[in-house]
Image (cartoon, rainbow, N blue to C red; front, side, top):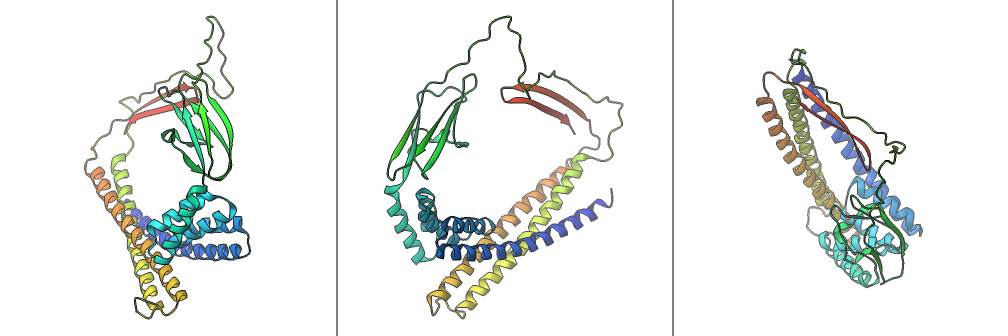
Length: 336
């Protein structure tokens, strides 16, 4: 047990090292994907360009990448995706020229958007509506912009039959309406009808298992172990935040060097390069702040768990398999 702090420290150092290497690799990969997207867009391969920009955005979410996602999406006819991207750029971008252009593009696209309006005649308890697997229950009665395409609307509620419909939403500036009728209840089962389980939904009985008091408890306190692990993870996050802060400072220095230490550059290309480096610096600075904040909280939580851990533990486990309309489930409860 005495060797655990050493292993936690070793684990924290390993996490910091991996995080640092990953951050550098992710930044380089994001730039490569962005450059590939620009080349593909110049070649008129807009779908491939958008895929490259999306990859760059996931690795390093820069506002300039978001702007290019809007451009290639508009070229593909995905007007809602383009509109959403331009709106975000218009609200967040610090590059005044690009911000104004994004706002102009968003305003021009707004009246051309295709919208989907889902209405429901009734909404029983637990009523839920999904469109292509996404929950849109809170959007009922609201005209929602969508990209042109086919959509499946599914409505469910406990004790009712599922309702679904497929609709094609096409046409610039048009609103496609889907009206969900009152859901039907399933037919009651006649008395005496034998019940058969569906495949994969076999009937199970409830079992309860309780550990005996005379069973030897496991060595050590699980709460203390969890506390030590949480503290180690918190230390790793704080260290990762420090690394991200150093990287942000480096990006700021690079941004200033582009214009020779001045606030303005001699050419638009240099200005764009400085803005890109500034965006990268802000992203890393925000990451550093978030990592340190979460790390400090984790250290506090872990220390609290370790300090308040009881000297002896009672261990009990309850296992309760049960059936639901979606299949079998198992609930495990216990004291640790």
